[in-house]
Length: 144
Image (tube, rainbow, N blue to C red; front, side, top):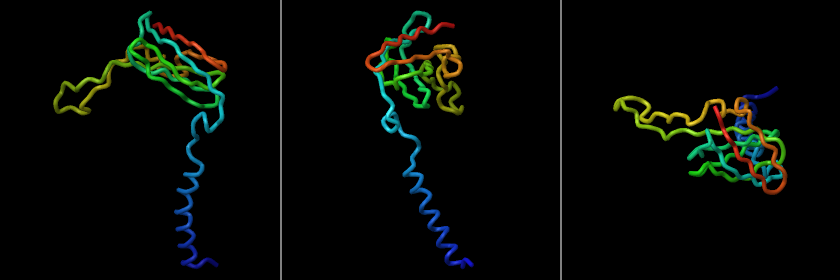
């Protein structure tokens, strides 16, 4: 039969061990933790034949690994991507704007998207790329 003292000690032990075990297990890790082979990918993102001056390109490998790069002023990007099949999405918005209502919340309003919403999700973009080991070029031409 458990006494109140041993029950309390068991609860304290559980409270101490749960955070430690979560810390040891972690939340996944990056490509290094999974030892996925990586490749170098660079390119340019355009919309209606014009370079996107800001935004992100995001790759999702079939393993679930996600990597992203910020677009340069001419729409260029460069990053390390896991070798193999990747779904791709692109995000690009105008800069946030101050709220015209001085008492309004939030203080800033999100900028309008520069591209159709479909490109801002892996499922809707229809974009994919399968890099091989070494250097790869992937130019993305977005349309309506």
